[in-house]
Every structure is written in structure tokens, then in C-alpha cells.
Amino acid sequence: MRSAFLESRRRWLIKISKVILAVVVAAVGGTLGVAFSAQLAGSEYLVPFPAHHVMGNIYFVGSKSLGIYLITAPQGHILVNAGLEDSVPGIQESVAKLGFKFSDIKILLISHAHFDHDAGAARIKELTGAKYMVMDADVPVVESGGKEDFFYGERREMRYPAAHVDRVLHDGETVKLGKTLLAARLTAGHTKGCTTWTMKVQDGGKSYDVVIVGSPNVNEGYELVNNIAYPQIASDYERMFQVLRALHCDVFLGAHGGYYGMEAKYARLKDGGANPFIDPDGYKNYVNERETAFRAELAKQRVASR
Image (cartoon, rainbow, N blue to C red; front, side, top):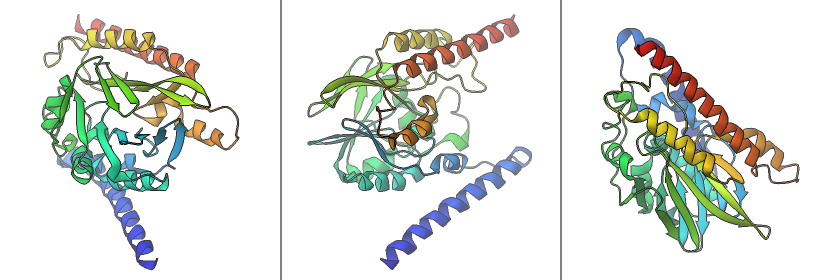
């Protein structure tokens, strides 16, 4: 018992030390040109959050910021998103707290190929033997450890351990484990292979449509006009919003908890009322707000390019 406590305390101290170091490095990096790893750059993504049941066979096993989901089945489990390398122990702990075995994860999926969602993939594959399935356009990025990313590829701090992809996915294809079926919808723009996952879940005798949004965000520095590395980026964003608007959504989830107000909804679980994750209006409002932001940025860049 004491050894378990000491080990837990040791891991906590390591995480805190990394956060402090990341702050120091970020403070001096701009003037000294210090390069630091994606793991340090993303230490804010390691802040813990309680594992919890979302609905049906879907469970949240991520952090305060990262949306990571365990989808359970008698034949094993599907994990959606891998987080950072340093996220893996927290994911393991969350899975165990929910009463499941981490080693039973059979399939690993991601929302998109950025380090905060896929840097832990190589380690998870090593620990579980899970089959890694990735949308076609993001495969070169994950298999190069981020080097092939159209925007972040030259930034060493955004790189991570490369991981072999076991199955290359294409828009509209499905992933099945037992009776659990997820559909991969290409919602490119944020990355070339950004993926929004949809599935149906049974809960309380009713069927619900679940949407796990990949990312509709235009990151700082993205060129929507005259982008040599990604010429079709603006049209991909346009198509992505068309896809998201066309999806029927009852249960709104996403690659980051902030997309769907995860913290506030989790707090409402204890009230014992209606499941707060059932939020079709919240989904529509989020998509509309993000599309408005995209169009404003596109218009600004078009004016600036004249």
C-alpha cells in the first residue's frame, strides 16, 4: 500500500516538474531559440480529470483538456485518441478506475494527426497490441512522427514517436468490433485527414446518434489563401462544415472537452437529471460559431492577399 502511494506521488512530482520546466523553457525559448519536445510543450494537456460514463458503452478517459474515449465491447475495446506520450499512464489509470482492462484495447483511432491527439499512439500500441487505424491523408504524418505535417512539420517541438498504421481508412469507411460500429467522416482542414467519428449508442431503451468532432478550428498561423503546402485548405474547411451540418447529432463530443462544455456537463451528472451530454442544440451552435470564425478569418486573409 505504501509503495503504491510512493509511486503515485513520484509520478505526480514528475508531472509537476515538467509543467514548471515547460513554463521556464517557454519563457526563454523565444530569445534563446531553445527547442523543446512536444511533451513539454503540451504539459497543460496532462491536468487530470475524473474518468466518467458518457452514455451506453462510451466512457471518458482523457484529461481536463483532451477528449479521449473508451468504447467498450465484450470482444475488447476501442480507444479514440491517444493523447501525449505522457498521457498514457493517466489513460491506463482512468480505464482501470472504470473497471476495464487497458490490455483489452483492440483498436486505436484518432481525431487528427497533431501531437496532443496521437503522440501516445506508439506507446499504446506497444502496451496493448491494438490495431492503429488512421484516415489516409493523415497516415504520412503519424508514420513520420509529425514531420510530414503541412504546417508544424518543420517545428521540432511538435514531433513525437512515429507509429505504424495497421489500417488506412477512407472517408465513409467503418470500424467494427463486435456489435460496435463507428463511421469515419473526413472533415479535413485542421489537418488533411482530420476525422469526425459517428456512431449509434443504445441507452435506456433508446438509440442516440453520437458525433465526436475532429476539429473545425483554424489554428494561429494557418494560411487559408495561397497556401503552397496545402492549396485546397479553404475548400476543405468549406466541405468540412457541410459535412458537420449534415450530421444528425444527439450526443456531442469532441477532440477537446472544451468543444462541448465537458467540465460543466460533467458537474451536472451528479444532479441525476437528464444526461447532459445529450445536446443537439449545443452541437449546432458550436458548428455555426466555428464556421462564422472560419469565414471571418478567410475574408480577412483574402483582403490581405490583394
